[in-house]
Amino acid sequence: MIYEMRTYTFAPGNVAEFERGFGEAIPHRSKYSPLGAFWKTEFGPLNQAIHVWPYESLQARQDIRGEAMKDDNWPPKHNANLLNQEAEILIPAPFMRDWDGEQELGNVYEMRTYTYKPGSINTVIERWAEAIHHREKYSPLAACWYTELGGLNKWIHVWPYASLEERDRIRAESMKDPNWPAPTREMLVRQETKILSPASFSPIH
Image (cartoon, rainbow, N blue to C red; front, side):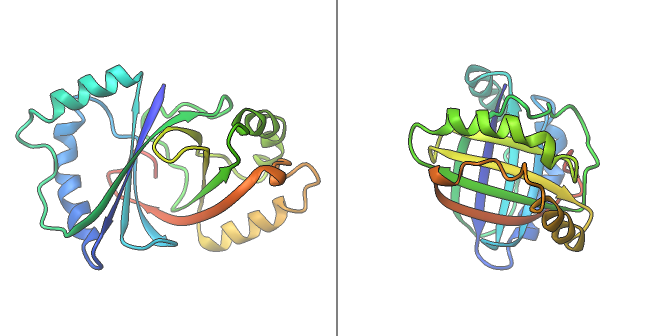
């Protein structure tokens, strides 16, 4: 299983227009393969829409996208001013749960992206695998991937919360746990975070 994460950056005030058009078109696109998630940024880099697509393989992605692009109702029709597009192919961590249909996980999502030194991802996977069950005592993990294509050496983890207040409380509690976070700091190059809200049509919400 692979995941494609597409991040679109718009001129200010344009995300709602893109979200509207995407929501109208997604029933047509879903005939070919299901959407995994659709979020928009609330904190962090603003004016972004993020959509994630699961595929069985790179070949399946290529075949499905080829078929979908023949559909007159796809890609979405909108008048939003799109400034930039990024696409990354992601591999799920061994301990990530499969995305299987709709999941009601939270109203607020935090996407944390860590960039590690080249050659260190296998060690990161091992150390996270040993520590993640300690973190999930406080709240569930929605997704955890590492990049295969696109920006390399990235480790992306997504956490759902009922509210920003719950996020603050749970993070404070988890940081007191002696078994969390996983000991990877010596390999870290960069850390980024985004607070996201799901669209009404997002299967992950």
